[in-house]
Amino acid sequence: MQIRRLSSSDIDFQEKLESLLRFETSLDNEIGQTVTHILNQIRQHGDKALLEFTRRFDNPEITRIDQAELPRDQWLSALKALSGDQRKALEQAASRIRIYHEKQLSRSWEYVEPDGTRLGQKITALDRVGLYVPGGKAAYPSSVLMNAIPARVAGVNELIMATPTPGGEKNPLVLAAAAICEVDRVFTIGGAQAIAALAYGTTTIPKVDKIVGPGNAYVATAKRHVFGEVGIDMLAGPSEILVICDGKTNPDWIAMDLFSQAEHDEQAQSILLCPEKTFLNAVAESIVRLIDTLPRRAVIRASLENRGALIHVRDLEEACLLANRIAPEHLELSVDQPEQWVDHIQHAGAIFLGRYTCEALGDYCAGPNHVLPTSGTARFSSPLGVYDFQKRTSLIQVSAEGASELGKIASVLAKGEGLEAHARSAEFRYR
Image (cartoon, rainbow, N blue to C red):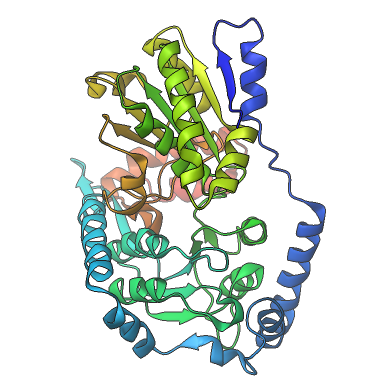
């Protein structure tokens, strides 16, 4: 197979880099029209439309939409039926994710000024959150953990999970994860129809305040459309990994790290930056030798040939500059003393420090959230966290003395904006 080779010293490098990073985010017209139709039908006809779409796309066997809700004992049975290794891995991952996210908890605060005016901020959790968990080609129990646990830590009252079960086939690991996370209700619905039901509510599916979780193009399009009716986590693009290596790591390790993202999707992006040409050659050889050992080799090959690259850079300083330009979802610093390079990185969803810190550990069990900004949005976005499930409300209690002083300021500014009632409202409270 052929993976793109670039050098930062090439005259046209910037143009080639732009082309490599460019990802067509415009939505296919047909997908947009289909999603709009589904959203409108469910908004107007509720359960009747939801049943029609669920029978068409997921499970033709159900005759009433309430049959799509799984009783709690099914999740618990799925957990009990897991092998010892699987249950232990899920529980250990859940524990580590919970411990990490507990450190993100924000708490209410306030302070009192000398004149008695009290100011502060009240932190409250969202009431109800919808968790979308993909099904179909692949099922992701790790998505349940990464979305449900920070919501629970934040204090969300009710978690509603939606997951498609094509042909009625349920993934036991996903259900077991729901049991571990103490999700409140699970519905076997998927696609844009699940997003519509969670956003608008039906007789059977409760309306939520926020929808989180990954999905296909139909799910992403639906989330874009319902934003404003409800909150959403983010609009995620294909998965990305950028590796900065000094040339001293085992090239097989780096090749497999690149594969770990490439196997997600033909549009996933895997890039290596290194100042050592001989190491880039070694990684290229590892890629050719190892790719056919993997079951998803066709997806990996397409991803690497379409959007992958091995890039020769002048030095590690230049590699960090390029990393900030790319703003990757996942950034591995596979170098000596990686901590000395952290301050050089301004934009990345997550940074993995050192040769032993492969990105796959972050996907499952390191502790930090694996829901990360993609497509360069790490320039202004952050990983999913407890803060995404909390609201901040300002507290203002002005004393009589404070009303006189603040009122004078407010009056001047209000009159400057031509808002006389604002000014008079403040002036009435002068002492």
